[in-house]
Length: 332
Image (tube, rainbow, N blue to C red; front, top):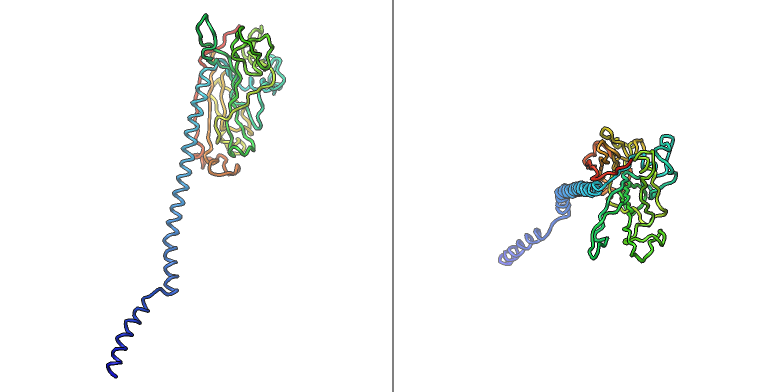
């Protein structure tokens, strides 16, 4: 009997011990989950913070790079300019003549001579000489030539969902063709007797310097296009600061003898503006171009939350450049 008790006792003890260590109690599981939560939650928050910071820095870097690229493009464009319109000249071409623009400064212009994209404001308008490669024939040889073209840059802010909640810059251009008496095709918008190859853009009309007794500015301000245009403004850059001066954007500033375009007002957006000297002392046109991006608009799709503020200035990288046209117009 004693042997039987001893055998039972030796067999039951390991079994009971094994059953005690076979799993966790509910309290142990709850405590483990609580500890895991307390450890993982800060780590998860830290990871999300790193990802957000990385996204913000990437947005700032992208804005800075695009502003630099846009300024480089505009600079190359302006270096070929022969005449840049100031605020008065753009008002003349836009048909917004008022009491300050007398007939001596805006002769014969009463309607808009420029395209009117929705929400678009012309900021930079100029004439330039553009190279046309291998366009003329001299004997049996081909040679390059130059034609005139009219270029306009706009700052556009609208509700088009294809673009950001910020503003964007668009470029429009029409240019002349090359006269060629051997051309057989009629150019759209031009008489059959007008022979060009290549054709001028529809609506193009050269400026007229034959007027007597008026200034160069008045002659250029009186330009009128030849009708409707086929060309439309093409977006150069998105994510430009759309904040107006009334909403807290810094006001524009210009150097001496330069006039601001658009003219300073509380409703003006200063994310893209120009300061123009149409005719300087050396008879050349010059421009100061100011750009300010909006990196916040890359991260937030709410226009009211991505406006300029001094405390968030790092999200609004800006740059400026001064460019003088490479040529000029001589007239009497």
